[in-house]
Image (cartoon, rainbow, N blue to C red; front, side, top):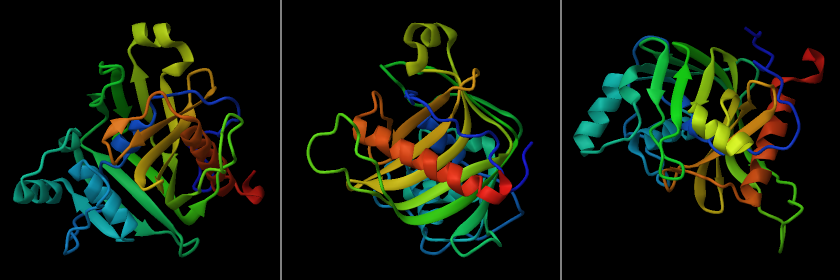
Length: 265
């Protein structure tokens, strides 16, 4: 287990082709630790996010709220508004967000579940639910907030350079484990396009008037993998277009810089 100023695993360079890890933001934004808290009033729902549980949690983070969101509070919001979510959020206990003493643009998140998580992936790729999400009973992350994050122009890009990501929140996994476990036959069929992936970092950001979740990590061989989840459409992005590949490279680069400052390397 790594210390508070190191990534759980080094974000290795290389060609990134993983198409499913975008689910990880979906699952990790699901809940965590401290004791009891009070839901802000009005309830912070991100307007561009389709799933109500995602909308609540993204809105809570984007509003820079600190405290705890409990499972019962989520249930109350969904019941009152007659909303339904595809996420298996009932297996979570709570989600806590507290300031990080390192600076005003940083926070710490703790996600606490009822026990080790082992649930089917609730979203499909190629009309098939391709495996399971596994997670430790408790996961702790560090968060950084950026107004913008510039993208390098992809080699196959035509037209003006892609715009930057905006309203960016980056998360480095400091404690616990998150795994996207792909069914063996599908892994063998699609190879590196879909791989078992250990998650090391996450992000949420706006791009071209849509909300996205990004996940970065590595497969069991230590090779880089990534994924994108379209929070506005409520679906996994697969295959991933060049501009979102560039966005994921920017997320990985910035997470590596923030989580592994020169003094800690």
